[in-house]
Length: 243
Image (tube, rainbow, N blue to C red; front, side, top):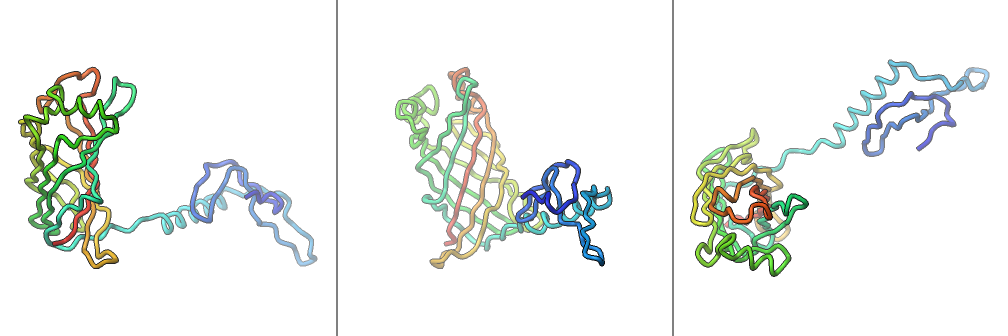
Protein backbone atom coordinates (compact mmCIF):
# COMPACT_ATOMS: atom_id res chain seq x y z
CA UNK A 1 0.00 0.00 0.00
CA UNK A 2 1.34 3.46 -0.87
CA UNK A 3 1.51 5.63 2.25
CA UNK A 4 2.95 8.70 0.51
CA UNK A 5 0.16 11.09 1.64
CA UNK A 6 1.39 10.71 5.23
CA UNK A 7 4.70 12.24 4.42
CA UNK A 8 7.92 10.43 5.38
CA UNK A 9 10.13 8.66 2.86
CA UNK A 10 11.98 5.42 3.61
CA UNK A 11 14.97 5.17 1.24
CA UNK A 12 14.95 2.16 -1.12
CA UNK A 13 15.58 -1.12 0.67
CA UNK A 14 14.92 -4.79 0.05
CA UNK A 15 11.29 -5.65 0.64
CA UNK A 16 10.71 -7.95 3.60
CA UNK A 17 7.57 -10.02 3.14
CA UNK A 18 5.54 -10.98 6.18
CA UNK A 19 1.86 -11.55 6.74
CA UNK A 20 0.04 -8.27 7.37
CA UNK A 21 3.29 -6.28 7.61
CA UNK A 22 5.49 -5.41 4.64
CA UNK A 23 8.18 -2.84 3.97
CA UNK A 24 8.28 -1.84 0.32
CA UNK A 25 10.82 0.15 -1.63
CA UNK A 26 10.16 3.90 -1.47
CA UNK A 27 7.15 3.52 0.83
CA UNK A 28 6.10 6.30 3.22
CA UNK A 29 4.80 5.89 6.72
CA UNK A 30 2.37 7.94 8.85
CA UNK A 31 4.87 9.81 11.03
CA UNK A 32 3.70 13.43 10.77
CA UNK A 33 1.91 14.74 13.84
CA UNK A 34 0.26 18.14 14.35
CA UNK A 35 1.86 20.60 16.80
CA UNK A 36 -0.03 22.38 19.57
CA UNK A 37 -1.41 24.90 17.13
CA UNK A 38 -2.81 22.11 14.99
CA UNK A 39 -0.32 22.74 12.18
CA UNK A 40 0.93 19.65 10.43
CA UNK A 41 4.70 19.38 10.85
CA UNK A 42 5.21 16.42 8.49
CA UNK A 43 7.45 17.93 5.82
CA UNK A 44 8.38 14.80 3.86
CA UNK A 45 11.36 14.28 6.16
CA UNK A 46 13.54 11.24 5.46
CA UNK A 47 13.64 8.73 8.25
CA UNK A 48 17.13 8.48 9.71
CA UNK A 49 19.26 5.38 9.95
CA UNK A 50 18.17 4.65 13.52
CA UNK A 51 14.51 4.66 12.57
CA UNK A 52 15.16 2.39 9.58
CA UNK A 53 17.02 -0.03 11.83
CA UNK A 54 14.13 -0.06 14.31
CA UNK A 55 11.68 -0.82 11.54
CA UNK A 56 13.88 -3.60 10.25
CA UNK A 57 14.21 -5.18 13.69
CA UNK A 58 10.44 -5.00 14.16
CA UNK A 59 9.87 -6.63 10.77
CA UNK A 60 12.26 -9.49 11.55
CA UNK A 61 10.61 -10.04 14.93
CA UNK A 62 7.14 -10.25 13.42
CA UNK A 63 8.43 -12.55 10.69
CA UNK A 64 9.87 -14.95 13.24
CA UNK A 65 6.65 -14.94 15.25
CA UNK A 66 4.40 -15.57 12.26
CA UNK A 67 6.50 -17.82 10.06
CA UNK A 68 8.47 -20.12 12.38
CA UNK A 69 6.99 -23.62 12.13
CA UNK A 70 6.77 -25.82 15.17
CA UNK A 71 8.63 -29.13 15.21
CA UNK A 72 6.73 -32.11 13.85
CA UNK A 73 5.11 -34.34 16.46
CA UNK A 74 6.96 -37.52 17.37
CA UNK A 75 5.07 -40.68 16.48
CA UNK A 76 3.83 -43.12 19.09
CA UNK A 77 6.03 -46.18 19.45
CA UNK A 78 4.80 -49.31 17.72
CA UNK A 79 4.45 -51.03 14.35
CA UNK A 80 2.92 -49.09 11.47
CA UNK A 81 1.67 -50.73 8.30
CA UNK A 82 2.28 -48.67 5.16
CA UNK A 83 -0.96 -47.11 3.95
CA UNK A 84 -0.87 -47.68 0.20
CA UNK A 85 -3.63 -45.17 -0.46
CA UNK A 86 -1.58 -42.35 1.06
CA UNK A 87 1.95 -43.36 0.14
CA UNK A 88 3.84 -42.49 -3.04
CA UNK A 89 7.14 -44.03 -4.14
CA UNK A 90 8.40 -41.74 -6.87
CA UNK A 91 11.53 -41.11 -8.93
CA UNK A 92 12.99 -38.62 -11.41
CA UNK A 93 15.55 -39.32 -14.13
CA UNK A 94 17.04 -37.21 -16.89
CA UNK A 95 15.81 -37.58 -20.46
CA UNK A 96 18.66 -36.77 -22.89
CA UNK A 97 19.79 -34.05 -20.51
CA UNK A 98 16.87 -31.86 -21.59
CA UNK A 99 14.18 -32.66 -19.03
CA UNK A 100 13.17 -34.98 -16.22
CA UNK A 101 10.93 -38.00 -16.57
CA UNK A 102 8.87 -38.48 -13.41
CA UNK A 103 7.54 -41.88 -12.41
CA UNK A 104 6.31 -43.98 -9.53
CA UNK A 105 5.60 -47.54 -8.45
CA UNK A 106 1.95 -48.36 -7.85
CA UNK A 107 2.19 -51.68 -6.00
CA UNK A 108 4.15 -52.05 -2.76
CA UNK A 109 3.86 -53.15 0.85
CA UNK A 110 5.79 -52.85 4.07
CA UNK A 111 5.88 -51.71 7.64
CA UNK A 112 7.69 -49.37 10.01
CA UNK A 113 8.72 -50.43 13.51
CA UNK A 114 9.19 -47.16 15.38
CA UNK A 115 10.70 -46.46 18.77
CA UNK A 116 11.76 -42.83 19.35
CA UNK A 117 15.53 -42.70 19.89
CA UNK A 118 15.53 -46.50 20.06
CA UNK A 119 15.45 -49.56 17.86
CA UNK A 120 13.47 -48.68 14.74
CA UNK A 121 13.29 -50.31 11.34
CA UNK A 122 11.56 -50.16 8.00
CA UNK A 123 10.95 -52.89 5.43
CA UNK A 124 9.39 -52.24 2.03
CA UNK A 125 8.86 -54.44 -1.01
CA UNK A 126 7.98 -53.00 -4.42
CA UNK A 127 6.51 -54.72 -7.47
CA UNK A 128 8.88 -53.59 -10.23
CA UNK A 129 6.32 -54.27 -12.97
CA UNK A 130 4.07 -51.60 -11.43
CA UNK A 131 6.38 -48.84 -12.70
CA UNK A 132 4.30 -45.98 -14.06
CA UNK A 133 5.59 -42.93 -15.96
CA UNK A 134 2.22 -42.10 -17.52
CA UNK A 135 3.32 -43.41 -20.92
CA UNK A 136 2.42 -47.01 -21.78
CA UNK A 137 5.16 -47.75 -24.34
CA UNK A 138 7.87 -46.29 -22.10
CA UNK A 139 6.62 -48.31 -19.13
CA UNK A 140 6.75 -51.50 -21.19
CA UNK A 141 10.32 -50.66 -22.17
CA UNK A 142 11.26 -50.03 -18.53
CA UNK A 143 10.01 -53.53 -17.64
CA UNK A 144 12.17 -55.07 -20.38
CA UNK A 145 15.74 -56.43 -20.04
CA UNK A 146 17.04 -53.00 -21.13
CA UNK A 147 16.11 -51.67 -17.69
CA UNK A 148 14.41 -53.44 -14.75
CA UNK A 149 14.08 -56.85 -16.44
CA UNK A 150 10.93 -57.37 -14.38
CA UNK A 151 10.42 -60.99 -15.44
CA UNK A 152 13.78 -61.98 -13.89
CA UNK A 153 13.78 -59.52 -10.99
CA UNK A 154 10.14 -58.90 -10.09
CA UNK A 155 10.73 -57.33 -6.68
CA UNK A 156 12.71 -54.43 -5.29
CA UNK A 157 13.29 -54.52 -1.52
CA UNK A 158 14.57 -52.07 1.07
CA UNK A 159 15.59 -53.22 4.56
CA UNK A 160 16.90 -50.70 7.07
CA UNK A 161 19.97 -51.45 9.17
CA UNK A 162 20.05 -48.41 11.49
CA UNK A 163 18.29 -45.09 12.14
CA UNK A 164 19.67 -41.69 13.20
CA UNK A 165 17.40 -39.33 15.15
CA UNK A 166 17.04 -35.59 15.62
CA UNK A 167 16.92 -33.92 19.04
CA UNK A 168 13.16 -34.46 19.27
CA UNK A 169 13.34 -38.22 18.68
CA UNK A 170 12.17 -38.12 15.06
CA UNK A 171 14.13 -40.11 12.46
CA UNK A 172 16.41 -37.96 10.29
CA UNK A 173 18.43 -40.59 8.40
CA UNK A 174 17.62 -44.21 7.67
CA UNK A 175 20.50 -46.45 6.60
CA UNK A 176 19.74 -49.68 4.83
CA UNK A 177 20.16 -52.09 1.94
CA UNK A 178 18.39 -51.74 -1.38
CA UNK A 179 18.00 -54.96 -3.38
CA UNK A 180 17.36 -54.16 -7.05
CA UNK A 181 18.02 -56.00 -10.30
CA UNK A 182 19.85 -58.78 -8.47
CA UNK A 183 22.25 -56.38 -6.73
CA UNK A 184 22.38 -55.23 -3.11
CA UNK A 185 23.76 -51.79 -2.25
CA UNK A 186 23.79 -49.62 0.85
CA UNK A 187 21.41 -46.66 0.44
CA UNK A 188 20.66 -43.98 3.03
CA UNK A 189 17.40 -42.03 3.11
CA UNK A 190 17.23 -38.43 4.32
CA UNK A 191 13.99 -38.27 6.30
CA UNK A 192 11.71 -35.33 7.08
CA UNK A 193 8.87 -35.97 9.56
CA UNK A 194 5.52 -34.62 8.36
CA UNK A 195 3.12 -35.36 11.18
CA UNK A 196 1.89 -37.88 13.73
CA UNK A 197 -1.20 -38.42 15.84
CA UNK A 198 -4.76 -39.67 15.80
CA UNK A 199 -6.93 -39.09 12.74
CA UNK A 200 -10.65 -38.14 12.94
CA UNK A 201 -11.63 -41.81 12.66
CA UNK A 202 -9.59 -43.01 15.61
CA UNK A 203 -6.56 -44.47 13.79
CA UNK A 204 -3.08 -43.44 14.88
CA UNK A 205 -0.93 -42.37 11.93
CA UNK A 206 2.53 -41.10 11.17
CA UNK A 207 3.98 -39.66 7.96
CA UNK A 208 7.41 -38.91 6.55
CA UNK A 209 9.13 -37.81 3.37
CA UNK A 210 12.33 -39.66 2.48
CA UNK A 211 14.81 -38.83 -0.29
CA UNK A 212 17.83 -40.53 -1.82
CA UNK A 213 20.00 -40.29 -4.92
CA UNK A 214 21.24 -43.50 -6.52
CA UNK A 215 22.97 -44.53 -9.74
CA UNK A 216 21.20 -47.21 -11.71
CA UNK A 217 24.53 -48.39 -13.10
CA UNK A 218 25.46 -49.43 -9.53
CA UNK A 219 22.67 -52.00 -9.81
CA UNK A 220 23.73 -53.39 -13.18
CA UNK A 221 21.26 -51.22 -15.14
CA UNK A 222 23.74 -49.59 -17.52
CA UNK A 223 21.88 -49.68 -20.82
CA UNK A 224 21.00 -46.49 -22.71
CA UNK A 225 22.65 -44.14 -20.23
CA UNK A 226 22.82 -41.42 -22.87
CA UNK A 227 19.03 -41.52 -23.17
CA UNK A 228 17.93 -42.09 -19.57
CA UNK A 229 20.35 -40.62 -17.05
CA UNK A 230 22.39 -42.66 -14.59
CA UNK A 231 21.38 -40.71 -11.49
CA UNK A 232 17.91 -41.40 -10.18
CA UNK A 233 16.36 -39.13 -7.54
CA UNK A 234 14.00 -41.03 -5.26
CA UNK A 235 11.28 -39.31 -3.24
CA UNK A 236 9.05 -41.32 -0.95
CA UNK A 237 6.03 -39.84 0.80
CA UNK A 238 4.98 -42.48 3.26
CA UNK A 239 2.12 -42.77 5.71
CA UNK A 240 1.72 -45.55 8.23
CA UNK A 241 -1.16 -46.75 10.42
CA UNK A 242 -0.42 -48.03 13.91
CA UNK A 243 -1.41 -51.68 14.32
